[in-house]
Amino acid sequence: MGHLDSQDVLLWGKVRPEKLLDEVGRIRSLCAWGAPFGLDGYVRMEPGFELMLCDFSKLRLVSSVRIHAPDRSKERGWNTRDDHGFGSIFQRRAIRRSNSVLLPPGGPPSREPPGLPPIPPPPPPVPPNWRGPFRTGHSVEIETCLAAAWNNFYPGEARVKLDYTRMVSFYDPSLMSLLPSRDGLPKNRHRLVTLSKDDAKLAMDRLEDDLNRKSGDPSTDWSMLLRTVMDRYGDRLWLLRDTLSSPERYDSIKLAAEQVRLQVFVMLTPYLVYDAVPDEDSPTGGKDHSWVKPIIHRCSTSLTAGVEEAQLFRSEKLIKRATDGVLRRICSTIAEIWADAMPVSMASEHRTHRLIGSWKRDVDVLMTWLDWPMWQTCHPACPPQMFCYIPTWPWGVEWTEMDPDDIDMAPRCIDRTTGSLILPRF
Image 1 (cartoon, rainbow, N blue to C red):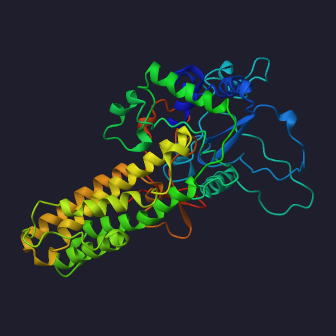
Image 2 (cartoon, rainbow, N blue to C red; image 1 turned 90 degrees about the vertical axis):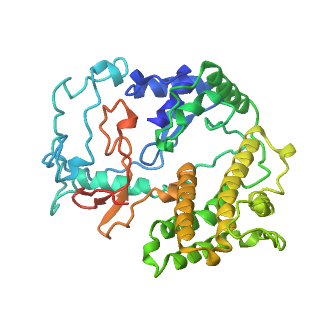
Image 3 (cartoon, rainbow, N blue to C red; image 1 turned 45 degrees about the vertical axis):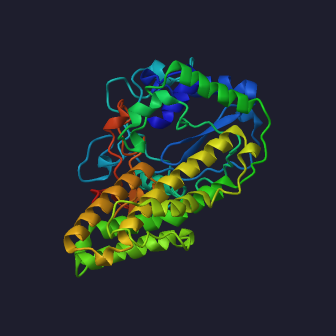
């Protein structure tokens, strides 16, 4: 799991697959590592976010209420593969390979003998005068996934405030040992397995330096700036790719190309400086696109032009450069399309066909490289009685899965009641 990779590097300097299920050892090691920096706990990702605390004695008990437990005693598909019901997606296999893997020394023995199926829990106690059935475990699991999905998109888990002045990213281009292994892979397949010892030390040195100094005041609202980029281009790029993918929906290929021209025109309107046009004697359809360079420059730099790098912390400089790089890639792609599309009404039908194909390839490459989360959802949208879910450990992924690259993370629609699925369609 990619999210465990960074924890492994923090604790042991490299990815440790044999530590995959050692959750007790992991949190103990994290707490021991963080104690000198005054860290009391960690927030990490599952289908949602979970908080791992190091010292519960510092908490103040606000309330303690006994509520109804779900009835799991007669669940269909308990810990089995069920191709027609809930078990097909929400398998929760026993993760104890032996009593010593997860349990702390002196802890209670596992209820699940190694190598045998888990023992179904007994029915919950029934309060006096209770009428009707309890909720099932299926219902709890499904609603847990739905609750986790509340934070899938902006602003995310708003109760956690990120410190943009003290961030370490393994996408930092200075960590060069990771670059070759990511080539051509989607982001959910990016791992830290190839991280060199030198790069691991560099990342850890930066993290410890940041933790050893006081938090600074960010000079820019980075969250809002990054969101502005995604708001400005996310839906428009999706619409552009949809238009390029189905030009047959239009009465002619010319009309499809003119629609592409309009969509690109919309995206570039704030940056189309008055004199950024081709020379009068340049041939229509020529390959000299140098006249769009002022457009690309203005489009790429306008959002961050007022941010002075000299006043930024190390991690802020990384964020700014990453933002500039993303904008440059987006703006150069759509500006190159604009250079071809501006005179497209005068192009032959044969050339228009070729342009549509070329533009689609360029937009596909751009969107694959960006891989923004707003695009990772079900298309078409799920019916009202279903919800869109991306399989994330431990729901929809076998607990003993040792190779994260085998996990199919394609979004799919899940029935809110039964848990049955509709396979993804694109």
